[in-house]
Length: 560
Length: 72
Image (tube, rainbow over all chains, first blue to last red; front, side, top):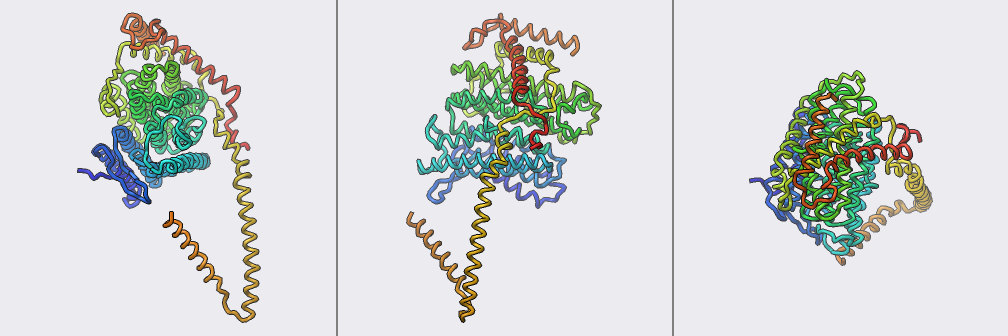
């Protein structure tokens, strides 16, 4: 019998305990914590399991339902496999950050009130930034700084929304917002949308993920955006506005993936694209659509981790990450290519792979609820998905022009982790009932029908034909594509002058003024001393002032 | 791409078009579900459109040299 503890605590305990374990054993001990959390997630009964009254508010750090259990299970599962992938890494800071980060995601998932949610949210922001910084390159350092600033901004939007909500309702309880309800709802939505990487609030993702550590990027690809999908599904189901926004996301990622040259940047833009499906599904808001969002989040975490793992193997073994510097070494890295392709087939929605069984649910839900345009555009986005992650990236990374690359052997644990995730991608693709059975709502959906298979086969074959004809056009270019981070990257010096520089000048002026006054006062006191008063009671008067202030504050609190 | 692979692809394509033409239609079928090969055309044109539109956007508006942000 497992104790009814928040699963987040298990990972946070791990982060605290890891430095106490002998250094050599740390990587091996790491996966045990998410494994224990997974067992706990599975064993917890449904309902409010832990609540405390604090300052007149009811905090619920642990509430379990079918949706949160599903997300909690996949978060911990990928934590285990990500840990196996990182078994060769000797970097305690990074491992602790990954555990803190995963714990943050679990804290959000099982939160029953806004304060617990917000706590997990901010832990995620800080811990995930550490996974970017851990790469210890100048680019990663700068990108991590932009990343944390953007996320703290998102967090403050969320906090402002929460404050308004609490002011209006007097309660911290998480309850679904009715569409367009209030300013509080819109602020919370903006804060959550930023973490979901919804354009134009998305640029942190393709900016930071390609610069993170090889092993850290696997965790990054799993937690932040999917936690947001969970919160969106909990609070904003049926908000129509999310349908067009989700469709835009799905296509936005596709367009930028055409232009991207860095392999993890291509994958990063396809996170945005895939999360777009989930956001649109939340907007549709029917039981089928919400099941689709949850199922696709589950599938996506698996195949996207696998893709990032494959890209990580390339970076780890060649030291290169750009298509323009890769190519022609597939024969020297067969296993990694094969395992990557399982992830690529999955994300592209090939039958018998897990993307097929979850993406189809969302597309069908769009069709059944009469959102024909959204349905067609989501199918178009899936053409782009196959084009990039299934064709462009592997073709120009491993095939294409031979640049005489001889990759170092990949650590076995990396390939073992990839094999584990790949096996799950196939398992759920072959046996969709395993996933459908744990979705939030009862599910009678059948993905393997003749028309659906015929549709998918035609699209995939002819996407390939078009790719083959146009493949020269798709080769990487040594150029970057401007995205919305342009505004803050180019605007930073201006903002610095306006916000930081100005404030600093005010502070130094005040500083100078205070110094001058103090000196003047001191001079007077010296005069007094000279006149026979041995010690001026400056300390006593300061203490008195402080005491009065504290009394006033206490009175105000008691009075309120 | 070897000849055999192209033939295999051709067979899959032909099979899927035949399945669409003579097999059951999906519930909530739209008009294009009744046109055999509609999704093949959609896949092909969609792919071409994605490449052309994105590249145009890149050339006209978005692409910069790699050291763009370092330069300032």
